Length: 135
Image (cartoon, rainbow, N blue to C red; front, side):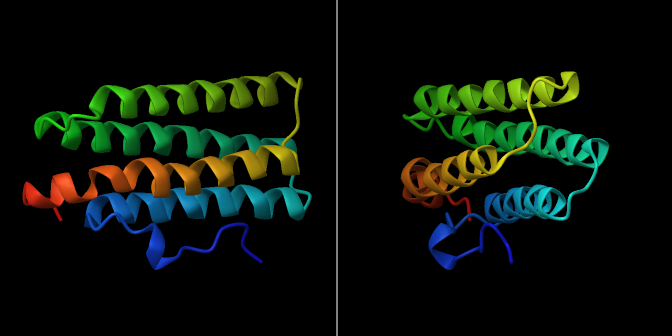
């Protein structure tokens, strides 16, 4: 059973971003599966690293769209992205050093953050960017 099921309600009506959000959901689900199956530390570290790297790619793409189109909420939105990247970097570093293991709390944090970020933050730029012709 997946930790997060993609719902049409998550769509921001911009194909490239929706596809990236679906990939982020898949990576969090992969992490959940690895943990539930008792995969080794190295397998979990690999998935966390993939999640971190893909998150950076996604945020860069999203921020570039906002910046190129003079989205008025860009600075606040970028700050939220930066905060999450820092938190995932901390998780990644602590996992690699053995200070922390992936727990249900970490998974719930990632799930909550992604779903809330899409619904409460990303959806704010939908109409603005759609009106700029980005779909």
